[in-house]
Length: 134
Length: 184
Image 1 (cartoon, each protein chain N blue to C red):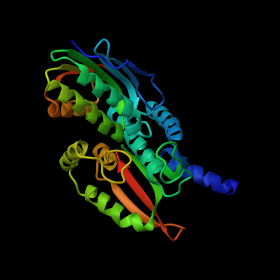
Image 2 (image 1 turned 120 degrees about the vertical axis):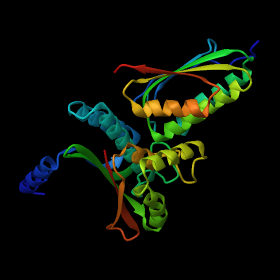
Image 3 (image 1 turned 90 degrees about the horizontal axis):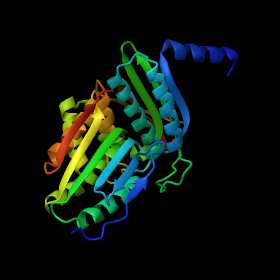
Image 4 (image 1 turned 45 degrees about the vertical axis):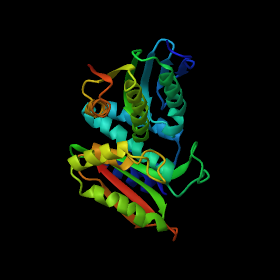
């Protein structure tokens, strides 16, 4: 049994920040759009905080799916995303199963390399590279 | 500026294949609007999609670097949101390459520190840059950074040749103008 889960988190897509659609109640999390807010640490703070609470409340063997479809992120968002995924890695060591679907433009080498970097750093996540034809 | 001066200025813009130029205050919303303009310019160019992505990424890093660090600031030094700082950015084409230039003023007493930070980037190979990028990604953000300390490395990663840096005297005695050039 999962203990009490945090409320679902929805942040609409804005000019320079992605849509965050974290449905903790369904164990489906999604990030979509572009990410270059002025202050990435402040933009991602709530998302990271609530995700930590969510993951801590999960029973082992719970399957969590996260779909990432970001077409661009700046350097400070890169740092925040890397931190976000480290929280998933920590949950995996407790037996939570995390599936990361990495949607990217098939021709985007930078996104492919960052995906590979995540896969390399967080091997416990089930990483699916999903190249999408432009 | 006379009408003739302006014609001369416009002729230089054409002659140097300038795609985009802005001098003034940089904020997040100004950057987002300019990013839109740059994207439109690139869409109608014949640049390869990967080149366009690199130009876009370099543009955003340069604009946000100015927003965060230029000495000429209209927002309080300690403020972390809604910052407003002055600088310039220029994108142009040189043969089959694109270049981006940017400038902003920095405090004269910060020049040595900045020089030490950027100097190694001039001689690093792409493999060195990628290695440093991976290490920085995993490290704690450096003191004084408003991002993750990845900005210059991101610029270096996207460039097709080493970044160029220059420091020039400014009208203010306690300030120096800092230039970056990236070739894509």
